[in-house]
Amino acid sequence: MQNSNVENLPPHIIRLVYKEVTTLTTDPPDGIKVFPNEEDLTDLQVTIEGPGDLSWGRTLDLKQGSQTWLPWT
Image 1 (cartoon, rainbow, N blue to C red):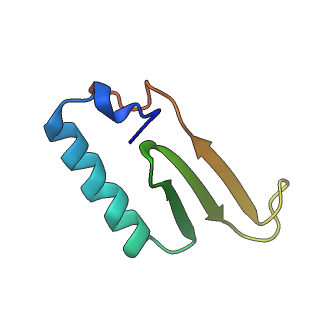
Image 2 (image 1 turned 120 degrees about the horizontal axis):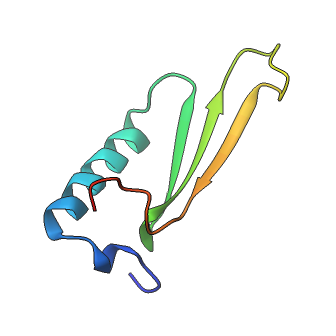
């Protein structure tokens, strides 16, 4: 995992995040798609589908790749 923020996290947090990301990837809630970066577990892309009448359209694409995204680290 080069260029990864994971190396700065305690092992139990890495396991917890890996489990949650795996669950979100394999069995996501309706309307949500998660695309993890296999090289860096803290780098996520998420697509959220909403109703078609929203001012920003039907989908919202988010990208998360910050060292401070976990509140408990």
